[in-house]
Image (tube, rainbow, N blue to C red; front, side):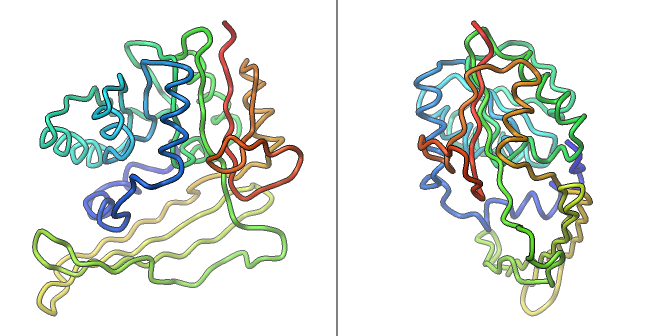
Length: 261
């Protein structure tokens, strides 16, 4: 992934679950579960992070592996797995260099993971690696989303992203973010500042710049990307539903493609 290891390390990784709270009600969870039920196991969660999808599905008896670029995220995932009596296969890899010991019936790319490869040529190469890790008849699904449209500001001011109390010590964790966009390249860039305050004293700070962080796609561009590497039966869904998008442009859509049987 082009978003560097530093974008998902340290304080950002350790507070990842804190600001997202309960994720079991997120709409993608139900969709991915149904995709696995339809197309089969084994499955793999690309960009598994701290384990939102993989640990949930493992607890349901699904054969699923996890891949992430961040050692810090994977360490948190492994710790949570141990506390739940789970033993996931976790791989510290960039999806651009994906090289796993087995192939899959279902590959999941939650959180728009393919968009974090901001160069089209590299994204195509990455998608080809994903394709090569599928069994015949297997599928890959990932969402594509971006809220910016022509006429909106190209840059945002700093804004408070979250402010929450850390249960382990009662410290207050705050995060601020800003974003700027490059329409000709269809890329966005972000900065994030984090701080931890305990008893009125700032005890930890962190600053991340992800430039570029990712690339956005139109529906047609995403479909062409899938077809270029050999996917067939390419389906485009509205958000995390099984409703077809058709020709309209939406802020969030999911694309599913199949490796020919």
